[in-house]
Image (cartoon, rainbow, N blue to C red; front, side, top):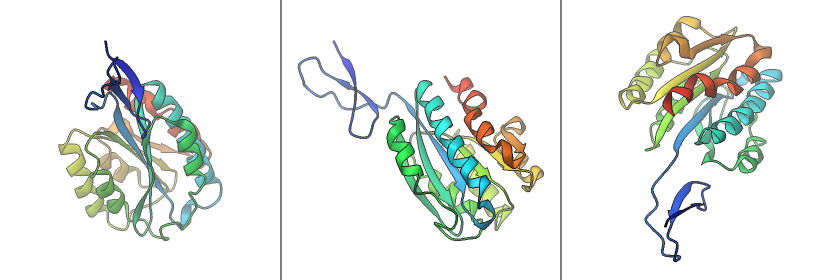
Length: 198
């Protein structure tokens, strides 16, 4: 009889009843939050995004998903590998600040980083502006979509709604919200994004 256990990365895997390890099989899928940390995200926008990311992580874990976190500006960087350990996620997100990876909006770099994950189910892009190159971002997004990866976009009132509509997998996954509603929109994104994937 096999039992479920958490491995060192916080992922569910099988463990034999007599302590013989069965080769690990991922029983959950990964979701990546990709947050804009360019200069325009300063103040309340980033604070809202960080709190929304924590809410998202908790909700995703309840639905059987591991949440990762990456940021993008001049370049992209991983902040937290996909995990179901909410406390670990919350600790790592405290390091996120505006300018941590530069000041521009190289969204394509973030989407390319997302493409490196083998078990990725979805990417949630949080941004308040226009990327350095819409063409490059759409090209990177197309690669993810070809793999069956869902893309949900949450843009503030300063973001280009038409671009977000193109970037998202489906038009209903492109949200255009007031800056004060970023946290709520990110936190509730699991209902839109993950409910159909269960």
